[in-house]
Length: 59
Ligand SMILES: [Zn+2]
Image 1: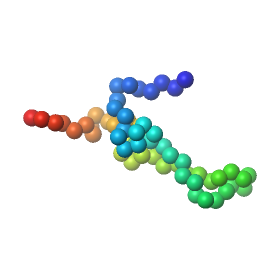
Image 2: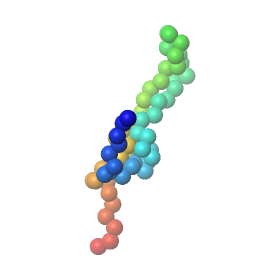
Image 3: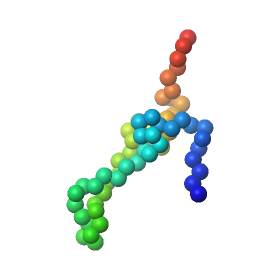
């Protein structure tokens, strides 16, 4: 059972799903759909925002 770190906020761009598989429309020689993976550019595939990206509000 995977454990997710709870001390970091979930990335607002990908909502915690930083990697997606995109079908290219082609099939591999063994009949499977050929896919490529893409990482969320905001969190770089981690699924969480980093402390450096937090916005300071107020004074
Ligand atoms: Zn993200």
